[in-house]
Length: 101
Image (tube, rainbow, N blue to C red; front, top):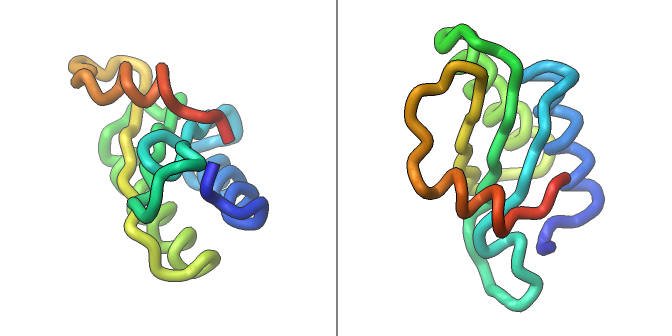
């Protein structure tokens, strides 16, 4: 995993603050691979929030607060929540290859 302990702790803490205490965070993509170089921070956020507007507000708040805490980074989020209708194939890839934070 190519995130520092500080970055992991900040991401995990802010995800729970923004998306709720039961939120699970999984890092996937190139940053989950110790051999890869560069890359965005790709995260799968699993929340219990059901209201789409509330999820959007939480996502914006999370992105802003993470940037303030760890510096400017390209962060891509997949957000899974109860009642989500469609799960594109990237969700399975994230779950299969990702590393839980």
